[in-house]
Length: 194
Image (cartoon, rainbow, N blue to C red):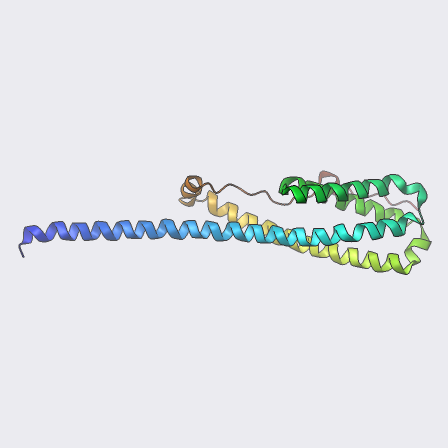
């Protein structure tokens, strides 16, 4: 073989290796984004699972308190309304509204627990105690799952914003995800009066 024919073959080989390497990098980055996006979706599904558990407990809790605190109807109505709103947001697949409503529901449940402090008969009721324990466990699970969701969102968002991943994320339509944030009223401590 002549030396003149060998140079184009070497150049073509180097170019082919370069193109294959670049393609491998793009495919690896794309697959990484897909994996992280699926992790975010899985983490959100875990949050929804424990929010659903809370949603299922609320009617029993409200009914137990209702029998003891007839004049606290406004708060009980608000808890019930927020429970319905969360269910509607979940059914519609509206993650942003679901997150917002879950935060407001958490705040209303906190106020409900403060109201319960006024009624020793409620606190002594076995049904209420069991429900309160279930709700406390559920709230702990919600906290853990929200943290995991926010960690998955943060990892995903960092990946799609870092160079050169940001160019590929924009090219393939990977958008930023929203973290689960507390409702603004959650920053204020509830007032407890005896």
